[in-house]
Image 1 (tube, rainbow, N blue to C red):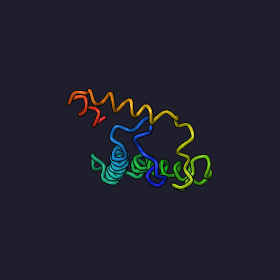
Image 2: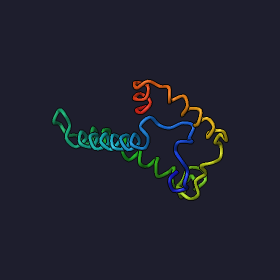
Image 3: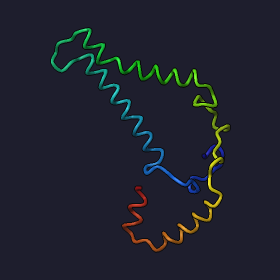
Length: 122
């Protein structure tokens, strides 16, 4: 949105924690993968067996394999990599979002402090 000069305030829906929520999700997914690898290489019971290790670690290459498959074989238009300048940010947007935003600002002026705090976080 910033790259194309679009304002986030005119989006009809926004995530509660914005982009930071996506970063937290990515970090937590990475932590889960690292912990799964750790448990695969040092089992809780202390008995390391090849068959158990394969079963513990098999999800990691499968997940990354599906991701690579999707990006390589689906192509640019159907889910592959798209450059920021080529992304379509206008199609499907409502034309009256500016009017709705102005009406929402008038409504927010009458909100109590607790409503403003809740809306800030959500």
